Image (cartoon, rainbow, N blue to C red):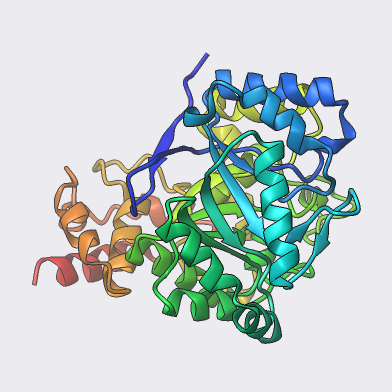
Length: 367
C-alpha cells in the first residue's frame, strides 16, 4: 500500500495531502459511517477536509471522528455557508455568518479554523456584498486573534479570483478544475484555457495554494452519456489532470462513504497508464493546440528530459515566478540537453512542437 503524498503550503509550510475530502455527498451516509470514513481517511494520510457540506448532518460526525486528532487535520470552513435550516444556504449577512461559524466550530469540537474561506465569489456583485457587509474584515480580525490561521477564497470565476488575489490576503484558493471547465464545457467552464492557466500560474507565483473542487464535474466526466466530450474519463485521469496544474496542492473529491474513499485512494497505487489523461487532446478546442498542459504523455524522453516540468518552470518564470528559474537550474537534464530526436513531438496529444520549444526554453534560461 503506497503512502499518501503531501505538498507544502507556500504561506506557512503546512504539509497537505494531495487527496483531501469533500463533503458534498457524504451526508447520504449514516452518521456512524461518516465517522468511520473520516477516521479511515485520517489513517490513510488524508489531512485536509473541506466543510462546504450540502447538509448540517456531517459536522458533528466529523467532530467526533477527529476528537483527539485535531492537530493532524486541516479544516476548510466557509464564511457564507449557512446551516440554520439543516441544509446548505448561502448568505452575506455578517451576523448570520458569525452564528454559522460559531455553530460549525462547536459541532467540529474545535476553537480554531485552519482555512477561513470567503465563500463562493462568482460575480462582481458577490464581492461587493461581502466587502460591504464586512465579511472579509471579520475574517482578518479572526486571523489577527489566531482563530483563523489562513485566509482562502472559493470561486469558479478567474476574473473574480484575480480581484481577490489583488488584495494580497489569500493563502489558498478553492477553484473548480477539470478538463471540461478548462475547455469551456459546462456551467462552471468560465474563462478560456489561457485565462484559467494564467490564474493557476499566478497562484503558484504568489505562493497561494489551490484546493480543487468539482474535479469530476459533478460526475459528468465519468459517464460517456453526460460527458461534454462524448467520452468518459476516469476518476484517476481527472485527479492527475488537476494535480498537474500549477499551484494545486490538493483535490477534494466528494464521496458517499468508505467504499468510495477506498476507490479514490487507489489513485496512489495507479500506474502511469491509468492516470494518463492525454486522450483529452482528441477533443480539446482549437485554441488549446500547441499549448503544453504538462500531461507527460511525451515520456519517456530518450535523452532523459522531464519535458513537462521544463515547460512548467518556463511558463511560471515568464509569468514572474522568481523561484521557477532556480527550480529549473536544479534539474539534472535541462532544455539544452535535448537531442532533437522528435520522439516527444510524435507523442504530444496537443501537437506542441516540443523540439522547437526546448530551443526557446534553452535560450530563455541560458541567455
